Image (cartoon, rainbow, N blue to C red; front, side, top):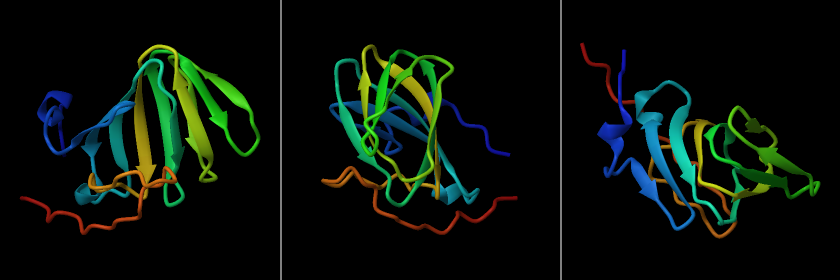
Length: 135
């Protein structure tokens, strides 16, 4: 069993910050469970372009409001607490928070924590062997 708090992650290598967002990577590939879990804050008044060409991502909004635009269709969806969006087709998208948005993100395959968005908004596919189990 693994129990981890956000306080344990804050200001460590697993706490990744940019001008538009902050992502606390709670579960990573090294845990060997087939997915990663992050708490992400998207900052009010920003616009972020993402395209997870190598990952599927589910995002559950816990606080804040904004919108997500599907760049393939031009559809805009409103985001609020209780909303979930699933990027199951490697969807190119933009997120525009009106207020700070806090969300829980799940990635498959899991991220290692070393990924950086490239110029296309893509995370590279980095694989990592799980840490050995402890007894």
